[in-house]
Image (cartoon, rainbow, N blue to C red; front, side, top):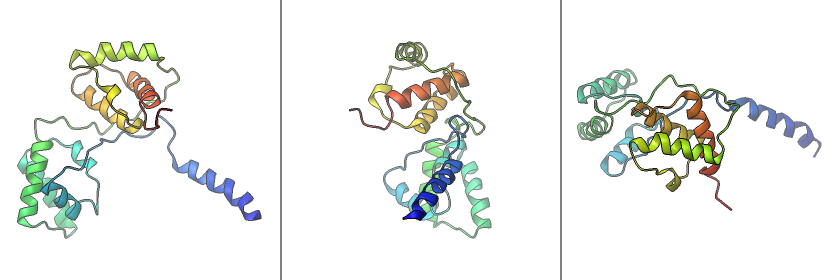
Length: 183
């Protein structure tokens, strides 16, 4: 029983050291696993070595995707069947083709010390988001990383939003539309 008093605080401290401070982690895209045949190809061939979020960092034509797949995979001795390669190349070039907007690789979330109030956030959403589409955030729940990926995607598509306002909005969305259930 005495070991709990020693190891409990030590394990909490070690866990805290492995969690990046808020605002200091790089943003990652949030790619959903597709349905159908491509899902089986990805599960069979891809996810043992890497996640599917990495696909969103690219916007390539079919030849570019083939080259990106061939070089590192051949170096590791990985080969896809002809059918699997065709299914995967179709998915990648259709979903992350030259018309798509690649997720930014170099975004590091800045720390913020000011936060949106509910009225400020709603005014901001009305001003920025509704320039292109209706306001849809209240139909979703995401954690901070999910909201950050969405807001960054909107910025890459032309939304006028600074890095600080991205983080203020992400913090507010995670607080009011986060993944914790409303009581």
